[in-house]
Length: 125
Image: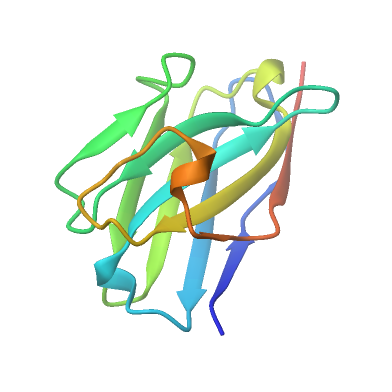
């Protein structure tokens, strides 16, 4: 049974930082590309960042480029999202996802096979 469990969310002031973690189990983690998506209240889910199996290729939404960094530790079966210079508009539930096409770093939700439950990030102004 595949499980993706996010952690690290919380309340932070604008300009602050958070690091999200997503721990995977039930799959061979290094065989999967990983992504982060977010959904704010009343809005559609949106792509945030993705990383291929080795970590050598990453992709970011324009809205977070230069502020967020995705990384992974295959030995720990964990993917991270370091979020700096946070803005109120970053407030959302952040979810991680796993894509069995390991060389991908996809931007589309439909390309991911497994999803976590999400963690809330709230940025106050």
